Every structure is written in structure tokens, then in C-alpha cells.
Amino acid sequence: MLQLMTTKRIGRRQFHFTVEGKNFHEVVAEYDRLSFTDVAACGICGSDNLDLGSRVAQGKFKYTSVKCRDCKADLTFGKREDDDQTYFLRRKESGELDWRPFEKKAE
Ligand SMILES: [Zn+2]
Image 1 (cartoon, rainbow, N blue to C red):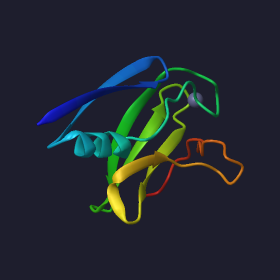
Image 2: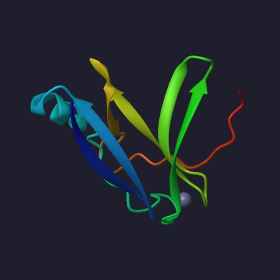
Image 3: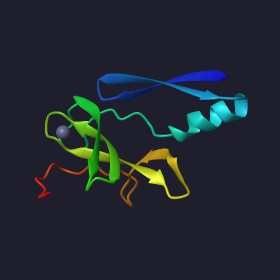
Image 4: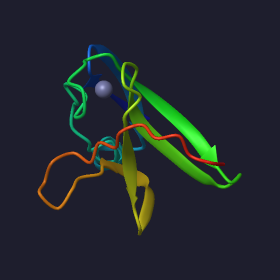
């Protein structure tokens, strides 16, 4: 097994991920699946107090997101339709990251 370590900076925090593969191609392919960019600050309030979060909606839809701990805005990771292990950060049509302000949702 080959391993490759990568670091993602989310706000003021750093997250270290180790991916594995049987050979160089596979380990790079696994690394590619975490192809999202670093996120410097909240797109709503500008805070760098960001964290990662996950939730499951209706018992089946799994969401992973970057959360702002100050204003509770949320930037959800998308998954590729043909490969649900490949994550990217959702963007608006304008190309900006798709930050959503916090709103209380009825469950
Ligand atoms: Zn914020």
C-alpha cells in the first residue's frame, strides 16, 4: 500500500487526510477525490472560524459541509453523480462558492 497525506485548510483550522492506494495511480486517484480547494473564510460574514460538519437528512441523505461557527452559514460539498466518493465544493453559476446563510428549517 502507498499512502499520501494531504492537508486542507478550512478557515483557521487545518485538516490532515491520509489516502491509500495499491499503486501510485490509485493513491493519486484517491487524492483526486478530495479535489476541493482550501476555504479561507465564510462567504457570508467573513469569519475564519470554520469547521467541517456532517449530517443525515431524513435518515438517508448524507451531507458534508463547511460550517461557519459564527453565523452558522453552510457550504455543502457536492458529490459527482457517477462517483459518490469524489467531493467538490458547490459553486454558484458565477463561480463563487455557494455559501448559504443559516435559516431555521422545519424538519
Ligand atoms: Zn459566517
